[in-house]
Image (cartoon, rainbow, N blue to C red; front, side, top):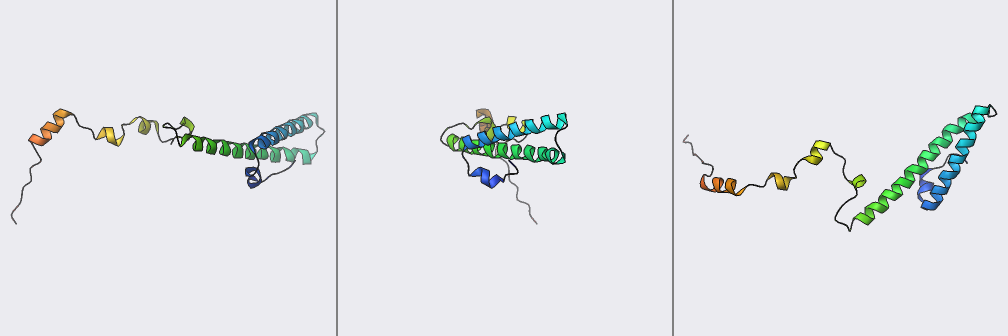
Length: 124
């Protein structure tokens, strides 16, 4: 098994992706064993990098598919899973929403109605 393209992986089912991932991992372990034992020539050593990148590609496509399925499933529900929410910063996530930040107490509303902002017209 060699280098594989991401667009080819996107066409496969998740079960096939997991099976291919398992194949790549076993091949990688065999290559590492041959590296330690000294049997592998330069071609085998260079193949380790290709296999590692292929594993990363398969995992990326698999996670993309999983996240997309989660997004579709969470469209109907009220809450969004934590890993699908916007990251932002901790302070922004903790801050009040615009709705709650603009809320006023009854006392504040009365004060504003009794003493509205005064407007002055200046003569030029």
